[in-house]
Image (cartoon, rainbow, N blue to C red; front, side, top):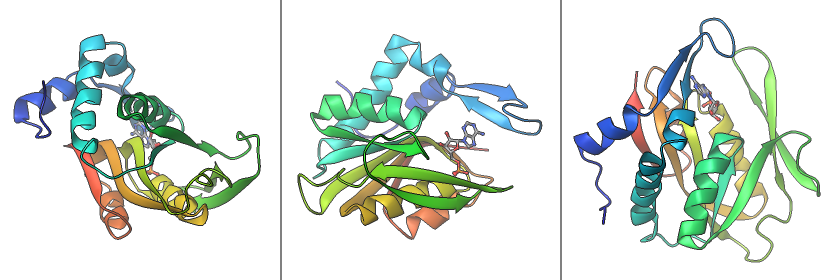
Length: 185
Ligand code: AMP
């Protein structure tokens, strides 16, 4: 049985399962690839169990995951917690009526969406937001706004990886409590 605290050994174990890919998806980007963690059944189970131990103590109604890797972590955790899962997707992917939020990228804009009725079963649903990584925080900030616009309340944002060279985490901390598993350069 695992506890909620992350020891240095726990963190190293998970960190060593993540692969860095240079210049993907474009030159200059160091991509943090979690597929190597996901395909390792023991490491994936360990991560989800640790998150489960933390969030089973929380009063949450559902988990919202950010496309695409937030779906994988969020859905696995939601099933273990016996909570529902809400997808936050790139523009044009969700089939029913949506709410959208545009946000700035380094160059240009992106847009994420949530279903308008995502939280209609319970007004002011308590939502845990999850994604694999936070960098500038633009995606997470837009996602928190979407949760609020759909009448949900974001009780915490959880990221497997925080890229410390960016200031996204500080921005998100102004909006909601935050939990990160690994803070990396
Ligand atoms: P940001 O909005 O800048 O915080 O970027 C976070 C989103 O972009 C997350 O959904 C990540 O999966 C993805 N992302 C950004 N930078 C990286 C990176 N270096 N490696 C892997 N995913 C990234």
